Amino acid sequence: MKRIVSISDCSELDAYKGDWTRLSEAEPYFVPDLGLLQRDLRVSGNKFRLLAVRENSQTKALACFIYYDTIKRFEFATRKLFELSAREVSLYGSCVLGQPDEETIRELFRLAFEGLNFDLINAGEILVDSPLYRVLTSFSGLAAWRLTRKQELRWLVRLPDTFDSYMSSLRPTAKTRVLRDVRKFEREQPEYRLMCRAEDVDVFLREAELVSRRTYQWQLGYGVNNDAQFREHLLWLARNGLFRGYIVSLDGKSCAFGWGEMNRRTFIFRATGYDPQYRVLSPGTALIMHMIRDLIDNTTCEMFDFGAGSEDGYKSRLGTISLPCARMAAAPIYRPYPMLLAGLDLSVNLTKNSIMKMMETVAASSILRRRLKSVLRPLGVSSY
Image 1: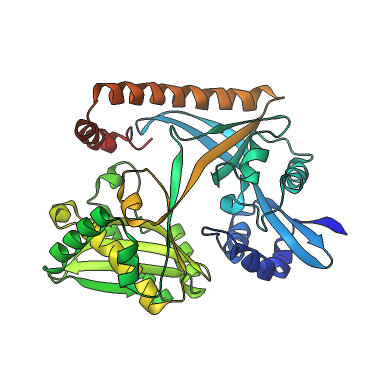
Image 2 (image 1 turned 45 degrees about the vertical axis):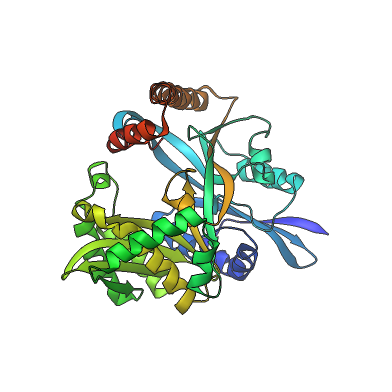
């Protein structure tokens, strides 16, 4: 007989960590560790609801919803327009584990939202045409929308037994370009340092921030920031064997960094950056190739998850599997304030869409379009 168990006490999550890990391994992409959520909940004090579908004493499906007060920031070209407070529900890991049918997911949603007076749902990055996507976009009383202008693709690599086998799986043009870039960088005799222990975290953060401060992303408010909150996050990952960071140096000077997070079978690529003065040497490509080689040679990892990206970026060149996905949000339609938030979000997005469509019309050739995007990228427009 099937029943749904609701957990809202942080100490009770321990009983479901094994089920979470087991069900995560059946997903085609990275799923964050339940222990990390448990730690974050204890620090933040946010309320949550873990819903477990139980059948014949076995856990068949899991979904976790987190409830918190937040500030909804409205931006245009990285310029803040205004902010509004919101009560948000977030789907942890952007997934419902166990691959249940739509009827079950609909019941989980009903229980998750029952008795709540919320403004927004942050579903995260979910697979298009999956049961979760279909339920979210058709759930009674909700209006759902995409947060990105275009449908994205989630790029992955199923890691083979050898690095040579991975290289052979790339498209011929991509393989030629990658080999050229790596050989060019390797001629400079770079030093690669792997950092995965708790005692490595301070060194990684110090070196990565130095590089990150030289990138254009830093000017936009992104990059690796060596602050207490991020340090504690990486320390927890490292102590639990989930952190893997890399620093690349040329002539004793750090020039690039990258890091990611592991679960038992999947590595997710979180961030990378390099000193722009070395751009001509393609340090970013060389570092990612080093990361993939390291995972194949020195771990039991089976999947490299790049996350979402476009069809013409580095993720598409280096990835071997693509899954259509979309970053999704939703709001209840029966209250004015949530609909105001949704309307404002959609209006800002529509304006961005119109500008980008106009730019794409003007930039008819693919070469001119790429150059135009490279000019707009520092303003945050082309990344939308």
